[in-house]
Length: 296
Image 1: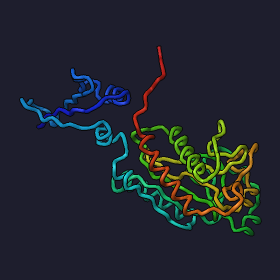
Image 2: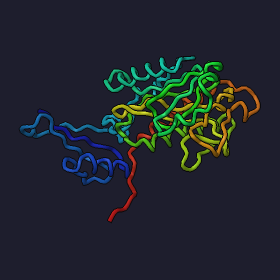
Image 3: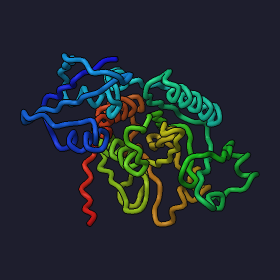
Image 4: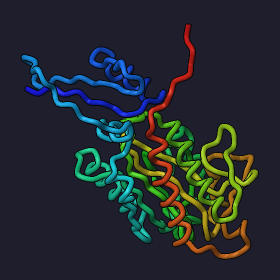
């Protein structure tokens, strides 16, 4: 049996709400402004007269409690580059990473790859109706078709396109809508650093330059660990997009960084910027959110 007081140095609204939600009965606010004392009994039983007091900063407490990524998952920034892959093989490898993440055998990971030509169908009803080319044309062009378990409609992956597969445990913040917005912002910030002012379009996932879509996003989760992810057109041959209605969108077109900038783009540099921005922003995504909704 052990008893300890956990003294949290500093105070902010995020901690206020977090403590109210997680420790409604075990937490008492200390008389000293700016401090919290968290009293915890392990194994139950009798008390002890001189509990151990531990000083800890707020961000350390959140990390310890699993409310933010651990230092190992952010400072080390585990980013893998699988190079060119077949879609089925990459999907299998993602599933293996997800299983390891959920078993606690691996931390959060960002994977980059570039696929052999493939159309992938998401789970949206009627996605297959947005495939235009017939089997003979697909065979002539060497493009396979794969039904996936990600969200979204139909899209194309192929050479010159950077595909990112974040395998991230979202248990501390179970909000897929917010996660999609997070991925969009990573992409917007990244292409912005490389000379393109992209943005969102209302009601449409992905990032755009006006009516021209430059990156698609579609994700799935298992036990709140993500897989699938985003596809950014860098030096992509856009011709295969003519064989589909990309993402089922009829009021826009598809573009690439090369087309917009008027020159080939260094894909290694794009991946470097994407990875840096992803790991920079992830801790912010996991910070406790203040619910400002007022319900009578």
